[in-house]
Length: 509
View (tube, rainbow, N blue to C red):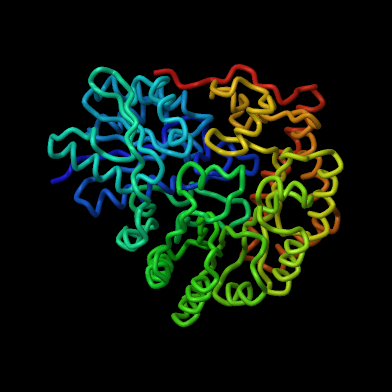
């Protein structure tokens, strides 16, 4: 029989992207799929339970708290799993309390990197929440659901932090990583999207629209100090789906979702195993799938691999460059060299693969000079699109401990509401001994203008829209969003507004 399990991305700000690496309302209009809730829904489904995935924030007309509670009451879940992040955990705790009022017997669990890092704090500030499922929870959710179905206590389940009958908070040992062989048993997450969500609600500025997001491998073996997901959620042990399973999903998308223009592979680092990458590409080529896809990668992929990726339909790679200062790259344990990064950009141009490059300002060793060095580097290597953003340091990461130890945090760190500005965009919470938070924000704004407003770049984008009709809708949507952002930031600057947060509205139960 199984039980009803609701998987919820609760209402907060419209188009608030919790599965972004910097969860907030995006300046570029980006709306991420609730990817981990999707995989957990599939895991519950194949184990006999009935999942219902609800994303309250993705539609432009965001679901209200009342609408969401009505849906929950109608579905009557025995277990509700709620994804939360650092900047939304207070709001989401109030959502949990509102649900608890109408469904007092429903067990409510929070999931995500933030609560995995600070599970006891989460339960302390969220009395409506019964437990935290820490890290990857595909199998934890099934085990808890099985216990509830059988009327058994879930207190022995590994990987949870829970509130017992005495209102004591108990943290059980970690659960093992979800094994690689289980990944092939899960339904294709695109089947979950098709069944539960409106695919047209989701948008990445650098990806063709409409798109779907999948994961082919979990965990990242690299040790970047700032990266939240490997340190708090997926870990550093890389596990992957089989080549056939991955390509079978691409074929399913091609056949069943013909309107989808791009497939975003949201692995932390798709190119960890180059042999596997080439095998996937060759399988796509051999099966003549003719699909377009985009991946996350490091800026160190060799030309041979890039060429076969392009041949197999890879349109764009998203890479974290972070800085053009080798000292900073060493400080953040990036494990690469500036000269190698520059060669990567030359190779992508030769292979015909587009690049979306991310640059982060404010890491250890950052100065005005290194920022200028990075901006000039970005213009020189000239990726298709860029992001410049101030460093975000999340609880549980090495970067957070660095900022906390050096008194660089500009807010009371555990007052999680302070992590957002009143419009839902990220607050900049780090001021270093060299650069204030406002200076970092201004540097990023200046860098975006400096990069995107170059006449040569604008001319190239106009020509791209003329000669590549499939790129035209993305260019128009992204361009309008960017110019709206430029107008708003210029208006704020003229009014003398700063990066300081004022009162942030939260949902009241």
